[in-house]
Length: 161
Image (tube, rainbow, N blue to C red; front, side, top):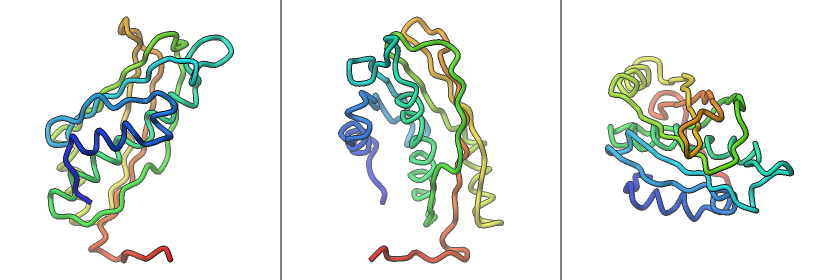
């Protein structure tokens, strides 16, 4: 489903798994080429040593590459299925304050996916993310492997009921 940047921002802000972990989408920009997210440290997501729980950090990074690619490819006329195939995280420093990250998709990244979808029918690639604290110090790095399938090539949509 194609949705506006503002509508998706609010859907993600109010999505309970993100809302209750204090994961807040600040903005989608550039017609879904960019996304900025804030993880607010609170009693809902603090661990025993006072830093943001690692699971919260990991969960915050999960959906956003897939969301961006899904919206971009749909706007380019593709019927796609997009999901996070795998992810890995390195915690470098405790998140004792709010954490932030921004994802930026370049035209080269988008074109690479589009060419693969047109020729091979699928695209799989890992992309990095960096989470920083309010002082700009790097607290965690994440690699998210995105899987995109062109549903017009081989795979048919199925009904879940």
